[in-house]
Length: 87
Image (cartoon, rainbow, N blue to C red; front, side):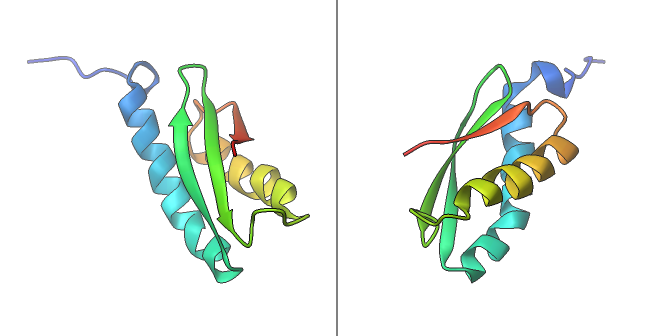
């Protein structure tokens, strides 16, 4: 029988879990006229996200990114160490 690889050693597994969490967050962001796009998850655990729609230029987007998205991701995907916005 094959041994399974722990999620910490499987970047695809981490990417999928991050995608799943973002899919749960997305409706709240969309309800305010914005959207988000997962660009990448680095091997170091940094999630890079691109904001769209009303989120672009919104003064609250930084707080949404860090207090909402980053907090949720760190809680549900322990491999995540930070979230960065890319343009």
